[in-house]
Length: 281
Image: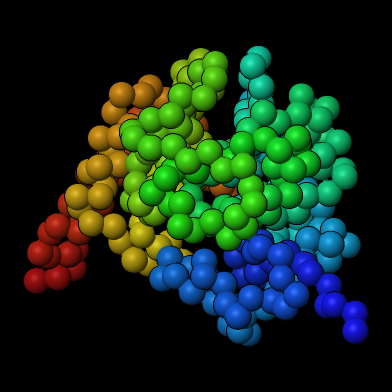
């Protein structure tokens, strides 16, 4: 009897790939966590091979040495990834699910990839495929989130502590909050040398783009505690930055981002710690 084909199944709701198996996993642990949700039609699965027939990655230069790209049409949670170009090697910040020949060719033309760094487990996507495609490059993830790995056979580089300098002027900063191991990437050369944050969901740019917010779950509207928000702000205090890039197109704090983060934290704390709300007696 012929053995069933073994595949790495991908959750259609969050876009995260799982270890190879003959049958789809019984559930997606990313989506069953209270930060996410199971799709309204129930748990569904696809594969990277199927996605390649439907989707493409679109690339957009954001500033010198920074390129953003994402899947079209939108898939999973709709996030975008960034490539930071640097003399000692390029960094892929966060990850999208689609990886195909056209994407590899485009990134090789930009200088390839030296490593991948993830802000938190929602962006695990297909990191196993990405790491292998660029020569078994390391995938940096904070050790506090190690239990969330869905594909074990990857060159994960678990890091601990408050910061992890990478190379040149790129530093990973542990903020906590959204996940215990949530982090941002500080890029000192960004924003014309004024510094930029690649923020993941630790510091989420909201729709008016003059504020950011901090949440345990953005889709389920679960706030963080005051202690956690103060911890995020403290973790960023040593760093200078004028711009914040979010994973979502258009949601960027273009200038004075340090003050935006501090002002947003004050507003958040005032709202969550107050016993009264606007309009209440």
